[in-house]
Image (cartoon, rainbow, N blue to C red; front, side):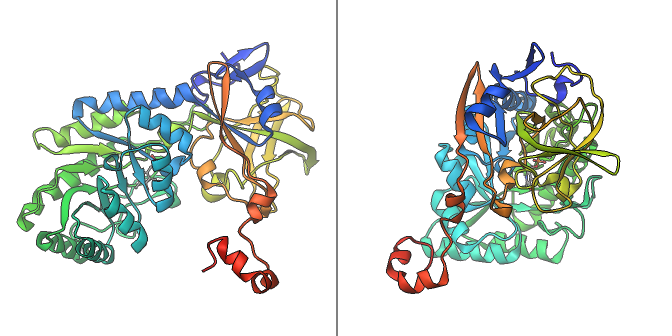
Length: 445
Ligand SMILES: Cc1ncc(COP(=O)(O)O)c(C=O)c1O
């Protein structure tokens, strides 16, 4: 195994051969030479294994297990989860298109979002998704209108903001009285939504939904939310409504560094089981991070090393453009040198990104051996909310993504060029002079 780093933060296929880290039987130095850096490497056996672990854990509860596409919306990754038998939680027309490319059946997809556009609602109705998860009254009215106009019926779930406020970073917390997501079951808005559903000939309430936040470390939170939603589902009889599915969202904590707490699907299943016993209600879960985080490793090249006020700064060719999480949530990672994972550390270093922001620090105070320009640096547990949140800030192209397995690598995302990033930009005089041509390119009108 890999010295100094525990298997709990590396992909399942990670191995160490003569001091060099391999993933899926591929040498990281060779991957960097072939695809360039920064490079995101996903381990197929880990993605597949996590999906199977989640399915096995919830099989006794007959739960619907979906992948929250927002964690990693790369079609090549979605395809693996489709083949593994997961359903899908999408949050935009873009994610629905990624799901289509990954060959997900519409009936296996539900659509979330607190501000869905009319076009997204139309698309959801047209596709015949498993459900539209309705966030608010405005959306419900809009959805009703779409269905009446098209003559179609649609299944809906209602997003509930449970009363408890779990302990996590405030930006990752999505429950409680002040949440921008969903409605409280007991609120005026909630009542109005259920009354509307009672009277609607085109909207069919199939379930209730909650997602209380991410990186939830206390598994008893799920038992409490399950109980709250099961109670609410029963109370809806007074509106002649009989939802059958109760989704508890995702949010299972993963370890980013050795020793960080993690929540497993078995623990979540054990926690929610009692609330459902004898109710006839079907549970649903939609983890994102837990399914992809550990499967991914970000690989960077060192551009410069310097000492500043006693700190060793290792500047790499990526940063907040491919991983905004440290800046957004104060997320803490570790780092390793894949070419010499067994070299003894010489002291702490901060791995800083290349972007023009003081907050662009990828990894703080990590024990590293001597590092020099041209070395590779790997950041484990990079498979969730990094590539899907990547930007082209500073007009730096986001990374390529490869999938590894059994000694082979497959390109899933080509690295865009600077020209790709500028392809939709139009200078004012070009628009005037070459109007028709530009219009033909699409997107201007
Ligand atoms: C509605 C919903 N479901 C599921 C998830 C997935 O959460 P996680 O990736 O923490 O499991 C999210 C994440 O924000 C979400 O908003």
